[in-house]
Length: 186
Image (cartoon, rainbow, N blue to C red; front, side, top):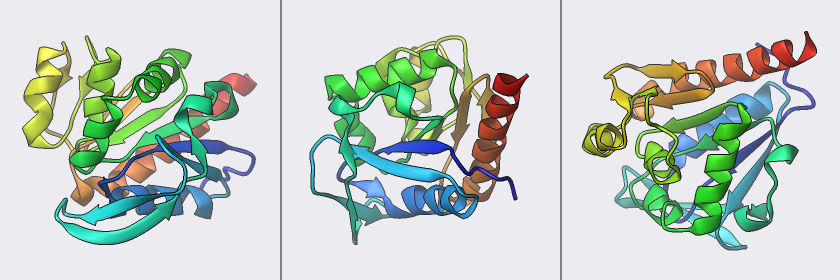
């Protein structure tokens, strides 16, 4: 297991987030020593879902995306769920934060419907990505090269298709953070 002590990772999510797509990557990162922060559109809590349909508890929000700075984080995770990214892509501050994060070169990992926010941020053109099947047309229309693979890594973008890919997604995220740290140290 990689040592991510001293690393800070932002999770950006809103109501409707797919619980396992937030929980498992967060648990993996915390288990490796990273600090995580849940950013959202409003303070308080966000409602999680299981398979988009069933209520699945809540998560406490740590900060507002509109007040967050990319400089304060080493990576960004965009969990899915259908409603969550649909809310994020309609929020100017969330879209700007995602765009700035991708442009920073730091790792940005999106799973399932999470890449919808990448489309709105205008950062997928010419990039190889994957996603849940129902949003692949949106990704292609935005200029992405869409593949049907467990994980697609293109530069600092890491994408996966669904919760079934979470183990590979988490491994790719940790590897990207380690690689970014190693290249910054050299």
